[in-house]
Length: 379
Ligand SMILES: Cc1cc2nc3c(=O)[nH]c(=O)nc-3n(C[C@H](O)[C@H](O)[C@H](O)COP(=O)(O)O)c2cc1C
Ligand SMILES: CCCCCCC(=O)C(=O)O
Image (tube, rainbow, N blue to C red; front, top):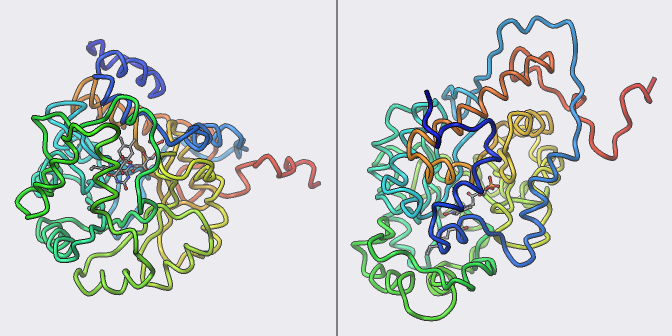
């Protein structure tokens, strides 16, 4: 019999339950978007604008949800998105998330701003198919180089460079509650370096407003241009994904500059308010990339049908963010596992109802966008 924390029908039920148990600073940081939160809302709403057209009389007695990413088989086309400071949600933090992702056979992307050291997170997920390290680029290039090489030596399979955050978006909940990292927690990947003490002071500081926005403004390199990618390839042999792409032009330029993968994302509505929903930006970007490298997307994925829509519209896989934190807050590793299992089961059933025995059967013609005509209108 599942405990109460694990008794839920869909992941949309979890947010209000997490709100009841998390301190308001932590919940506010996790849940919020930037400014008017228009993009945040649009991410989830965008999925509701598209309709699915099933195909019939196909043998779906067996449904295979697996896909390959970077040559590795993953149980279904979902990755855990990089999310900072997970030990505010649960004492096991990133370790629990890593174990859960591995147990469910999907990749996790570990944030630079983790509250568990990156090698420990990799180790906890050793049984999983693959893990990626998300990179924030600090002004101190030697530090960046050390971080990447440490991630590579620790067994990460790819680097995900976040390119949509030269500064942190204006998150009003963090300003309102004066967000600080709780005293007992550390940004564990940043300790042991000369700069770390100064950064730690900022995220724990008594200054008014959001400590993390101050930290960003001081330390993140806001001068990055496309020549960063060739430099990155000189310090690592790992594939490099670019996260935060929203225009076909940038996707094309990124691939030209050496990106091995593109992640269509508006950072969960936390950066530029009024940026488009990632799902709406996806088809144009997939067309511009033209299968040269994998295209992933995130923002608002909450259901198995959301994965179907994104894949039919050009994604190779999708990432999920906040529901992981709600599952983590409610029941640690088991909570994250239940979130992933719930979505995998929804995906499997919806694929069967769509007449798709495997992921490669999903096709653009099975999704109707608001501007498309219904299929019979073409007859
Ligand atoms: C609490 C929180 C922390 C995040 N931290 C990072 C981070 O450290 N690096 C990063 O690239 N993206 C970060 N993101 C963005 C996520 O990787 C992802 O793009 C977004 O959450 C996906 O949207 P969703 O939450 O609607 O699924 C964070 C998002 C949240 C909600
Ligand atoms: C000093 C810690 C900053 C963490 C920022 C993480 C992030 O990307 C987010 O959206 O929040």
